[in-house]
Length: 259
Image (cartoon, rainbow, N blue to C red; front, side):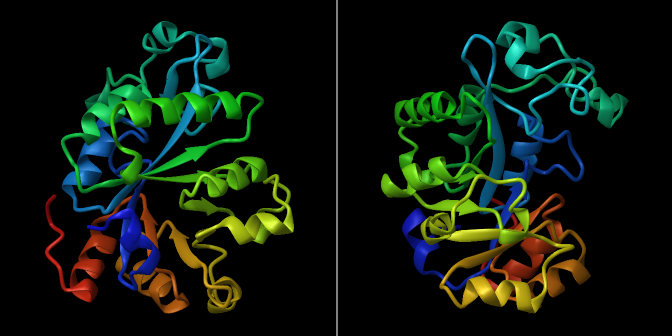
């Protein structure tokens, strides 16, 4: 496990659960977060947005159709209304009844895993500034400032966070049509996340040569983990983190099987 300061200097392999342990459990659920922590992840990546009544909730999508049995935009529903939808049933009957977690509920869970860091992803939206302000207020309330890094495709948010002294993760140049970055934005990034299907030694080298950390998203099998490491990735953001944790356990010489 790592502190934020160690992230800046370590050459060890770092493992993050992508939306928690999303390969086996409903993504961005408290269950997925707990299972990722128990599996030995150093970090958990999660996505945050605001409900209609200004409550930060955890969801990758800004709409409900893919992630729940609801419909419409998350921003058009109050937190109480969002809690009525089932965010587990699309993953099978065993997960029926799982509800969308609030960011507060997530922080309460992470109190039980004090050595696990959080990678908080802010999606581009008209209310992203308000989302960031609300989330940071909660982080201060829970005294977790020393456990959070940030992720965004919004260049203004990246610059703001970097200016506040935070560690910021971002997207590669290949995402130019999906992100709001200037060329200066890349100077503010600690790490660049490259989807596994785009990751090559060449694509990674351009960032490594600039002193950036490269993250692979998401190497889940032993072959994928080996390939990601071969390309120079040091942060493995996995849907199923078991293979990445096993590799890090060996390469880092640590026992990461439990928190």
